[in-house]
Length: 135
Length: 135
DNA sequence: GTGCATCCTGTAGCCGCTACAGGAGCAACC
DNA sequence: GGTTGCTCCTGTAGCGGCTACAGGATGCAC
Image (cartoon, rainbow over all chains, first blue to last red; front, side, top):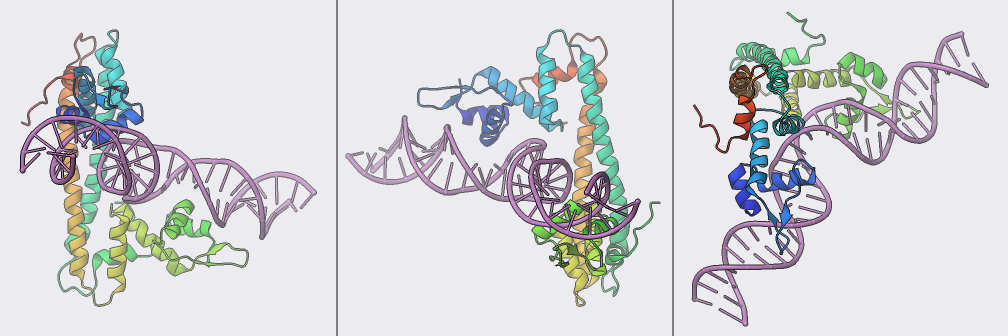
């Protein structure tokens, strides 16, 4: 059995975040020692690690909880996990696409900026009356 | 002179967001008509549009304000704008890189999941005692 | 006068933490 | 017995940038 600091070290979830998870009902409240301090079992530390791994993969807390439910359900098959993963993957890819579009737009603006220029093309674009039409 | 709804339409910033910007001091409070309604000038609408364009490019509000200051300072050269743009570009690229790493990791996990599999490789990985070492 | 659109203020919620303030308990060392 | 230093506790506020109401006033067209 482990104190919160040790649980944090072992799970990779910070102390403050563990308390936050408990407050929000994301993990079950661990039992307390006689002096009122939280005491964590191996299983509870594994649960924290599970959530951290989901978060590291970019899953929301809600998705992490769904995955945990699937993990603990012996009847659940791989498909639902795969489905959740694929949805998330699609989301990541759309975010990459948006960022790439941003990268492209911004690269062009920055490239046209040069030292000592009187008119800044980037500011001109930002201040223009009309939006630039989509390419 | 325009009511807030018209200002929203012309600037591309929603009514609620315009009020939020005013509350937060991001824009100056516009003058009011006799019945207490906000009245926006062309210049104020341009200011809103400027901020929206910055936001569309992914700049923070703080950066947007810095850019506005640079835009209104006749002594300021292009370099500072370029510098801000380049910093932001670096940030975007590092976010892309993180998302790509996520994409790669998640793709592999999802690919190994197949219908009807008894053990789910993704859940196995999430529940493992030890972290997967970096490649 | 009636309906609808538009406007107002104020407040709460989103997500997932993070950062305190202010205090208690416990072990080790002088 | 005192002091230092570490860990723990509760509770609350803040981050960014909105968004979404509730509950009410005003204005305009028919």
